[in-house]
Image (cartoon, rainbow, N blue to C red; front, side, top):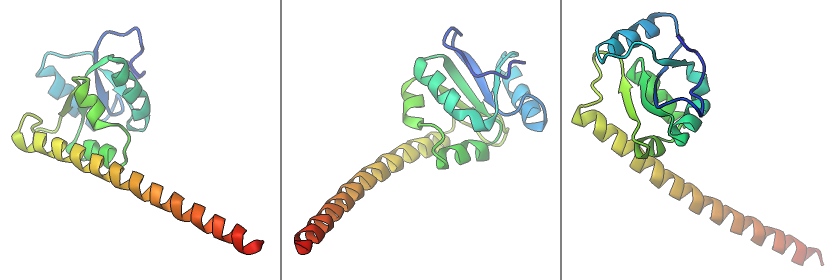
Length: 147
């Protein structure tokens, strides 16, 4: 079991976002064995920045999260850019038997998340621009009044 992030020289690999030992690892391995995959790369959930860089380089074909909660937590914490992963053709999978990533509901969840994040980033950019304009106006006023 490899516990290193995918490297630039690696072929497109399957990465499990979980420690290589423990109940999450067992769950992920059982799920992958059903797909005929026996040697995934292992990556601790805190190292998603390394995984994101590997996805952007085109080194990853599938990412498996042990549970849906792990995937959602990583999304909410903005540990990776879902839009980039999906555009790169990375298959995102959840090992928990109760979560089907092929279901229309799961795909709708990912689509909705991408739309919400895009709108959120747009609102943040507008708010940042307005705040900068107010700060410049305040600075100009202070300088003008100080004369």
